Image (cartoon, rainbow, N blue to C red; front, side):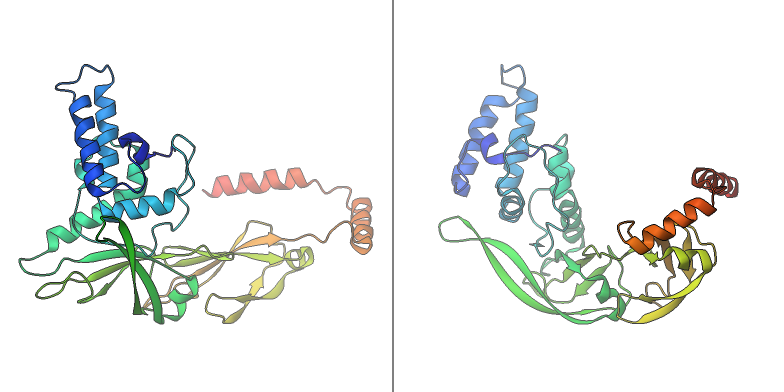
Length: 323
């Protein structure tokens, strides 16, 4: 998608004060409001101005935008990096994206989730009670298997005496429940906004990418690298799980690359544990190794009736019939 330079849209500097941002917005609103403007693209320009102001007038949103947008220019292709908003603590105040109308995909990708959470926290607030706050946190996949106490750092933007956004940090001791899933919330009672009683802090769990595994619901999915002879002849091979435990997995004779092997109950831990699914990945010895090259040449001479394309087509046909 296209990166939006909100400072350029409003014509203000990156260190502009809230008063300067508000003044620029009002001037542009008078110029482009469709009810009074003579400009041919007034409606589109007004939408851009509203979107820019919705971000830059909100200290929390502005701080997140400044962090993720650093080094990017307006109009260039942009994809938010995974987990970019992890560790940002948002309140339940401010602009509601439900009122955004036709705001851009860029706005929706960055702030749509936070907006939904803001609406949830506002609607759940009672008179005198501190507002609930929320943040996304990134955990290692291992944390879902072991659980336990973790130290997490959150940052929250505030305005200093000069009207500039500054980041404040706080460190929390959080008990991660064993078996926690992506998208699940950990509620820290009394850690939200000030009030009588204080609000709660809602931590939305996400997992950092793991080089070996990912979760599909409660199912732990990973690849199982095997040697050609292990796939052809069958074997028992070790698999190390995210919690560090090793189990033995039987590879059946004649296992083809892409086949899924299921180990019941060794997925995400819970009262009813998920399964472990391993996708067979056949790793060939390099033909640059003289020993392997000699064996490949022998197979080529002796297995002249083997047609890999025909075997693959037959496998695909069987899979289609089973579906």
